[in-house]
Length: 397
Image 1 (cartoon, rainbow, N blue to C red):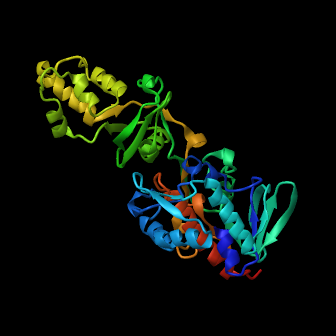
Image 2 (image 1 turned 180 degrees about the vertical axis):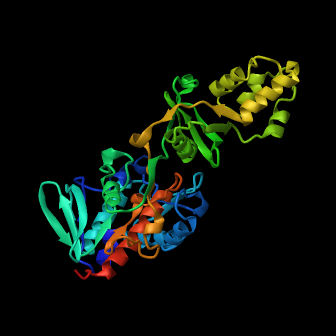
């Protein structure tokens, strides 16, 4: 995106890409469909250790309706909303159409694309920047846009080298960590439920840090996944990385609260505990939760004692999930932490430490939840950095 807007503003633009084709995170997103944007934006759902006010200023530089118009008009890519998830996808349901459309537009705007180029470092030199690359002589450029990504899904080409170079150049890097990643429980108390999925409300809390989400939940052979788990996983990950490991994961398994379950568990003919639970839950999970509460699923509701009913409701409404770890960067959708937002101009994303250096995307200290938020951030920051880089021009030596 930065290359497209830099070239559109008249700059001679060279796009260096580590992989042979580029855009691999686009290709794997949304199960190969590419959840290109959220249908609606709640700025409060972004996570940063920097100023939330600065984050909002950056986000608002390219509002959601304008981004939608860009993809539909400039790329000729109609977007459709998946109503149940409030996500926008290309009407073709093909992630490749998004990636190929962006590369084609870049080419039409005059961007020179150099795939298979591994950048090993960059540093200011005279009035510009020297870019070191593997297997070739260094390149000298007037201005530089860094869009190297973080450490998540390294198989797509992002290994954190950009962050390491920025740190060496004196930038403040808030500690990085895998975000939007599955959670692990060893041994897996609920391993027998692998494959069971349902919508839940889940909360993660660790001291002053907390996050909650409502959405899909999936039991895995190693623990838990699904959008709701990924959205709160950063609290678990940071708890673990800070040698605290005190984060609590608490789940409300259905739409029913305490009063709702009090009504649902009232005696009704010969109905059993299992029968009442299965009206709201998958059968295997219903049986597992009644066992966890120490109440036989075959127990008639008419024989349920008050203390048993209260134990059961506690498990159903505030069920605690044991956990021991996470799947790390290998399965993380994004990287938390990164360059402090205080070290870039929020209007241009030019570094406050080095003139002619612009930063965008995942190297910056911000990420959003599942649902297109992180593409929204990538598109907005890429556009701002590309436009400003084109206007910047070379510095005086």
